[in-house]
Image (cartoon, rainbow over all chains, first blue to last red; front, side, top):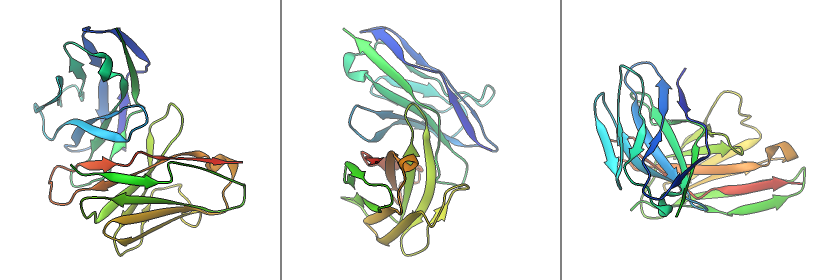
Length: 112
Length: 117
């Protein structure tokens, strides 16, 4: 079946540090890949997505590249801000389906 | 943008009672909504897919008689936890798919914290 594995948290970084949150997946065919963010007290929001191999999703300074050869979709940001503190979820949906399979989430705390 | 609301945001109920959670799409019509359950420090687990005007499709291991889902209109889906027990305490989240986006995007509600005493 489909599964998503992302790095365990929590992750604590200083403001302006570089961020990487690793995500790997197992799926048949060619899934679509997503990063969702959950700010404290709010619902999950789509951060970025990629629908085919080598696509790069980007939004708000965050980037992730769909790497089929390594089945990975790592999230990166060059300079994090305190406002980026949240829980980040990697997810996939298999081709032809709208159902999402989520990783466990990684809590990021950015300190001034 | 697409907004999904949930009501209530938190609820406490006694063991053996039933509780209903509402999920509404506020500015779009959602033919498909999803219900998830999230345990502390765990991933979101899909419970069921709710399609307007038809029966919900439940994931393996989810008791359909315990978690009743109704999607009677294009903007409202409800989850009723029947005869609740303490092990049903959890964070319940709904999402709605925006039709026509083509990108399999879902918009999530803020969640409902259920505590069964």
